[in-house]
Length: 410
Ligand code: UT7
Image (cartoon, rainbow, N blue to C red; front, side, top):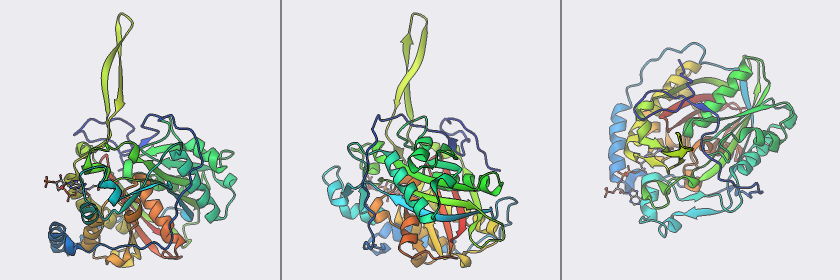
């Protein structure tokens, strides 16, 4: 059963699945039109593991485990939902920081970043650009792609851990895309799993019949929240947004959400966090209240890596079982864009060839909740994803949280 507890968890307590609502303080940035680079036809470099001895060793051990595919029973209510994706869009800030630039910021090399992560570049918000601008741009592109009127939308969910306003960005994003007349809107916080959790949440509204058209946006600007002197984290993250329009359907229709599975485990919370540091402040002669600030992202990369390579293949198999499918039915594997080595190991464990793995982290780095829709939108735009294709998506990250949806496109 999904534990949808809305709460703040302390380290090592099992708790949060996702947080509906904003979680971070406003940076006081004003709206501005952010131009985005939607680079088409870029050279995509698929990393081989030949230049990375340690990674090659871990891939070998993954291969040894990969034969053990467990027969799974489908879980009731986690199969097909009457919700079908009909449009996608994406946006990224114009300014980017290359690996060569990173060498001038922290003690690192482009070779280290590329061979250990697959990342070559990341886009960053600057000046008066806001996350809302990116979310609105991606949302408008998805609405245009869907060929619908923005007023047809009756639900907007913005998955983000880095909103412009801690009270939530979704209502202003809904207004920005022209959907405020009929839509209600809210933020959903589940870090890098946010887009998948939001997609399943929106699909439940559509499946239940009370709503007809949803806009789901994944948007994050984690470059605001990294310590730019910490080489362990600052080389990894970038900013961006991706969006998808879903419409309610009849269960018999071809496309749609075919199955899903989601998990969280607060016992791993310490391994990836953006915590609030608080202290007492006296107010008046008798009372004190808490004040403080959010501190930069802290990550135990090795533990998150182990968690991802262990849990992601599992959750994909669970979602496939719920969809009544197997890995043989998968046309595209689309994982959270954190590390190409994680994607290689997950693909290996599932017995899915790398040619089926969609990735664009070379260009954008890890854009948290935006990473899956950003890669999805690019793959649809380029014609790589075609009508009828089965896409196995999986997100994972802070919480810890992880999940998978199986979609048939078109
Ligand atoms: O969306 C959130 C999900 N997050 C993730 O999925 C992250 C998962 N973890 C990872 O992707 C990898 O663990 C990292 C890319 C973060 C790190 O790669 P690694 O191969 O696990 O490196 P490591 O942490 O074991 O560090 C190896 C060495 C260390 O030096 P020593 O202790 O061996 O001397 C690090 O200090 O590499 C050093 N190092 C760097 N060197 C150059 C760490 N970062 C850098 C860097 N440049 N940027």
